[in-house]
View 1 (cartoon, helix red, strand yellow):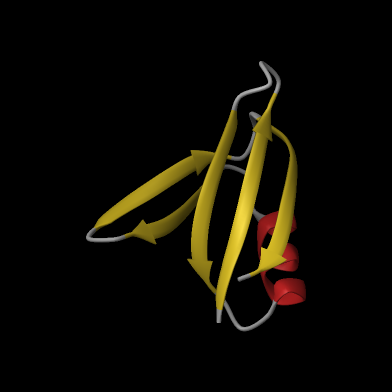
View 2: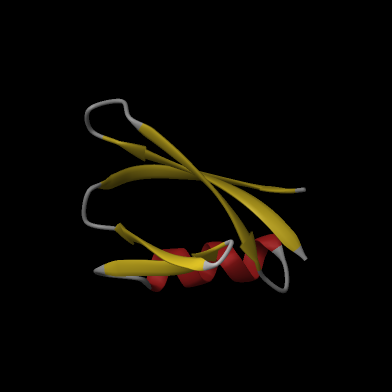
Length: 62
């Protein structure tokens, strides 16, 4: 299932990611458990987000 995540940072910067996951709840649990870097595939490249800098995230089904 394709899920959209908006990552919010202290400086009000927002990064939007499209992630494949089983469900919204499963992705939320995975993000909450992530202490350092969260990696996801973005087309043909792998993108990393430093979760220590994320102040909040929004998850919604596509």
